[in-house]
Amino acid sequence: MKLLAGKNAVITGAARGIGEGIAIKFAEEGANVAFTYVSDSSAEKAKALEEKLTALGVKAKAYQSNAGDFAACEAFINDVMAQFGSIDICVNNAGISKDNLLLRMTPEQWDEVMQTNLKSVFNMTKQVIRPMMKARSGSIINMSSVIGEMGNAGQSSYAASKAGIIGFTKSVAKELGSRNIRCNAVAPGFVETDMTSYLKEGEGAEKYKADIPLGRFASTGDIANVCLFLACDMSSYVTGQVISACGGLNI
Image (cartoon, rainbow, N blue to C red; front, side, top):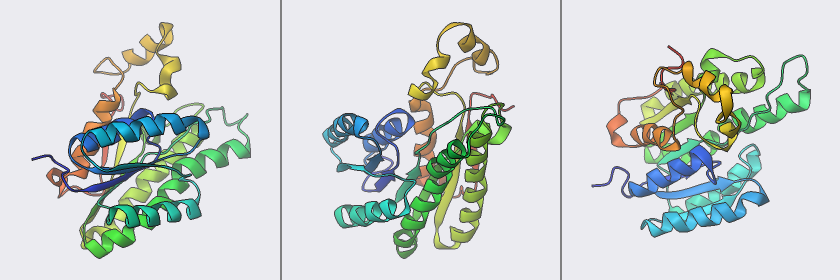
């Protein structure tokens, strides 16, 4: 029996990277998947992923939608409900970084990170909790970061957005636990994606790896496996938690 058989999942920012890995893992475990991408340049990859998921024998649909826009999230979830009938799992994965020292950071850079990383989590969670409350069941998984737990020079906006996600997650877990809706966060460390590709080469990569007890960056599959645990019934008594998938970086 597949762990997510018959369940419907929505995932933001899934055309590539961690989101793509989660979408594939969920589909392999039997979940139908609706996922978002935001830019025109990602349309081809999103279509290819939709076809790949469908080939795994599940229903899948890609939506061009901005998770940082409340009205866009409302339209997205309304369409998912019409097309899929229910939402069992929501993965708030959309995220960006605009790294800069605070002295040089512009208000626009700060606002863009907050809207994409933090406001998107509010936008999506606000939309999915109504059908979940009606069903008295659901799992919400928010993508935080080990940087939200530790902080990092040059990443004040990113760290603040990811720390905000942790506080939001714990509050939502307390609000919705009585309705059998769970809300947890995953805090990845360095993951091999486009966002961290610049760290793979030369002495810099070895320096970062030297700080990781497991001695390597995570694969997207490593993070997807944590999300699978939180999405399925094996974690039915887990809510309000932050699971650090960072190879021990935060020890």
